[in-house]
Image 1: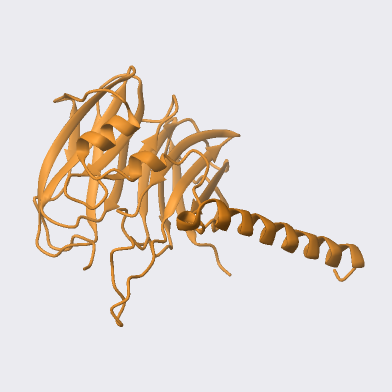
Image 2: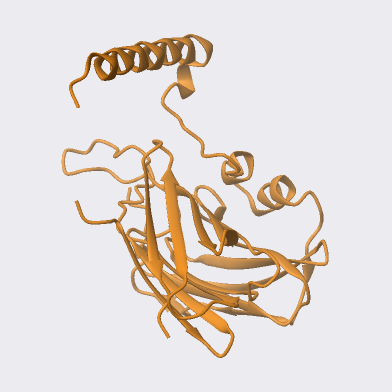
Length: 104
Length: 159
């Protein structure tokens, strides 16, 4: 199965801009399905980004983050070809991770 | 792949899991299937008002600041996808949180920024109805806030 994580991390001028999209329902627990039953909460709780063995960003999310979440941030350092490891874990204990290369 | 040890380990892990599950069921029947990732601030995410969420997350009072730039639409046609971005010129920022004042749970997202990560973040939030988006920035251990009203024409929390 292909990864749930799509990332684009561009290193330039001493900083790296990271943009990521994750495939995830982010069900809030307040929405009903077509049969009128509540869809149970299912959302990512923790998303982390690691560069060169150091955490550069941690997101704690609740059910109010949109479906297929998007995130953008910038960190100092990073060079073309470096690894960036992205991992998430949700409220049901499901998880995924991906190691991507920084582009120049 | 099908070596006896593998099968045995698998059986053991199944046993272990079911034991854990049973213990969990007995100990806390209402939250038996809840899983909270390590570090996730569960208490803060369960609060239903701005004041409670801020107290649970930071334990201190918020000061309004004009050094925080909070961008969100004036009118969100679709409350399920409201683009929000925050940036600040405050120094030594260690954390940025986003709240929606009239959502069922106020806290929406909480970002931890280590030294070297710029104090700017963009994401997309769900908003149940017209209310304020609040950005909270922790700088030098103190918290500062900015807010913006967003009119929601179609709520993002169903119902």
